[in-house]
Image: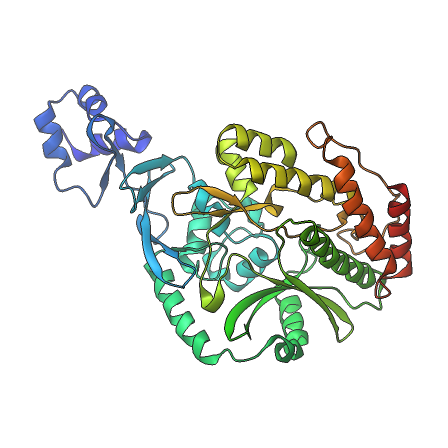
Length: 438
């Protein structure tokens, strides 16, 4: 019996020893001889009766097995596990903490958000054209994603470092940053125009999509600690498109403040105007001081793995609560956040705009709110400011009981916008309509 016959079977899917013996018409000792010294090609998954065998699958020229590390809040790096690509298109996660193996038909759900995404993802694609990845991020398959994150997962979301090179890059970057970053927020604002120009030049022509606001990141020193800012910016505010995005960035800042006052955890933000543009500075909450990190995973990843439906946030949260994946407290918080979003005309509450902190045991805790703003009034993808009617949302069955409370939050929010002299009169008029309707 040849290795080729064994490989043909394992290329279809992972197999138990019993299935291999029956399919190959061989004895257990013969199978053991075939498998002997094949750890470079064949991986043993699980233990005892649950044991299966799989054929390792190389991805491009990047190998077939990679260490995965976690970065702690103190910027220490620990081995989290091993990820192994196997045929036909699966991945094995070998957890370093528990020693258990899990097989996933695509990238493990908890690594989903490490992939380059949104505006920053498109910039990544522009900077790494040698990888020959599809121009549209939505066209990437798992192997494309692996090629990207093996090239550089040290700068991407969450606390994962995938592959030995990413760990080495993180260590080198950390030492470099700790030596050189000295500018505080006020000082670093002087370089915002440079970063805007660089970001715009990197962006592919006509590729901006709704909900993908241009942005860049910057490391600063604040209270003797190094923190990372994610900075959104408007087009020049002397244009209708620029003025509207300026209004929306200010509206986002006020939305986070309103929810924070109400007791909901939100991303910390500040707003400034420099060189004829408006900038929204948000401290990244998946980063800790001095380049430490926190594990984070989006509702998109969690829902795809556990829920299996694409209903609105309140119903997905109900499903996660029923499965024991989130606490009652976080479930209630999501209801309040979702209701508030509806009442402030946020029509872009997709699953990438709600996230959870991810503990080492893969338990979930709701992360602070971000990207909360009246997206109903965003310019079109072509930069046109379209007049849209005021539309007052109605409660859903799950938000019915909290609607009166959240309506008061929303009314206070629209009042703040209506009184903000830095916001255009046309947008303040919209705010007054919403305030009066509530």
